[in-house]
Image (cartoon, rainbow, N blue to C red; front, side):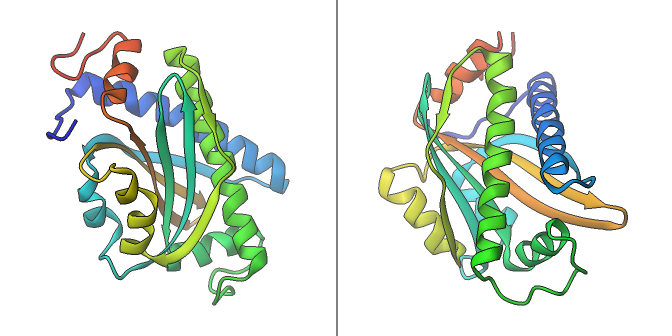
Length: 209
């Protein structure tokens, strides 16, 4: 699939609801792990050409952290959870109970926090998607990178031929009181796999029901 897909309002609502369920599950899991409340919401869920990810996250030179999973099962795909450097540091502070601005560089502790966060989010969203679609999704052990956006995306996708495909984008927001931190969660399937997902929901990408 290399052409742009425009979802109907109903299709977007379906994706949004699945994403909200995943975010709720993720927030609950994080709160239990940390023994304090962490809230999440999903401002947007949509389908877009994968090469437009740069417009959402930043320029190719932007430093990002990336938790990357290979997904096998009824459909094959990859999942990326991307945070800018600034958001990564702020989220480490939020999840470790520190004042925002404390973390100034990424160390082993910070890497482990971000990897565990990626694990929780991946599991939460895939569980929500699996429950609704009745499809099986099995994630790999996560890979972690902290590098320029262009290098991260190239390593994750271009070598596998994913770059022109469509991506399911789930914008995530973590918040606690007046603190808000944005991230981006991408599911990039192999060709035709998005059609499988939508057909399992009783929809199709060309015309709704």
